Length: 444
Image (cartoon, rainbow, N blue to C red; front, side, top):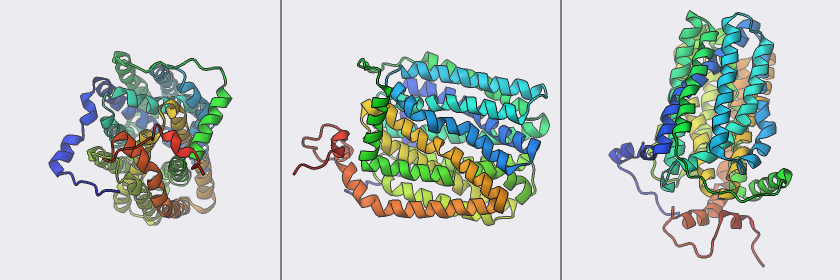
């Protein structure tokens, strides 16, 4: 692979906002940035509410499972439908439903009648919404930028806004919970959805026409599954992502325990810890946004997972608030760089007609595996303590990243022809028409 040209620092800063030149993406970025602050407020408030009501690590795991399990079950079918339906319309509908879900949480909490059962049921409802929302969102972003050269920047900016919200939302939530309770966080979240709904309705998208397809959802689902499993780079990327989601992502479920029992703090401590993680994730996303090319991301992905694993191990051993706050940015950066870099590579190499299905498997790996991790980490924390659960997750992540490193040369050889065809590499691709050709066995 040719050496990557070093970009001067000033040029990197100019590269940060390339995708914002496109009107549709700019609208989405602004609306989603506002909405995501409310989303992160609800995540922190929900976890704190359950822990305040029950004091149970196991129920924190159950809450995580309830909110994310529907994505594991429904995402593959949702991906088939996303490849058929108007993605813009689907995204508007999912945002309206999510606003209703947050409004119901707010009404129950502010009237003082909310119970654990209410939270779990509404979390399941949100999980159903996310099963359609996530693959739709990922597949639609490519149509918000007119120049495909800015796609990687758009994906990285998506991660930046998620983590800017992750930095701001938990801090506000911690203060609001201590001041007026969890219900106000849910209400702010419900109102914030108006921003993203307005931005979606203001867009002028030109979406490709979709050919009429026979109503064979299971057949198309099987086709997408074979594509993901036969194309080794996609399989490897999703495999590592699923491992991280299973063993590392549930660390957030354990944070109320870390904040209260291990660090002897309160809701504000939880907010600061989550904000510190968001700061690291934002820094990682901005780094990715400053890159001009996808070259080098293959090596960066396992390095990020190793950093994440080391951060979890460090957090498991920390008993000091300042030290835990210093470790959280490493965890956040490692998680975000691995997720966003994997997303970028997948979006680059996938066939357009299978994009919705592949991104549904991405959602299944990224979000769908997390509920099983939530149950596992909750059970480990209940039996052995939250630090042991964090330690196990960190060690498994490092082992998975090491295995990915060993396969990296073979993955590069398979991806190389796609990058040639797309002009990412300067060579001329002779006879390669689509990424799907790489899944065919060589002719004798």
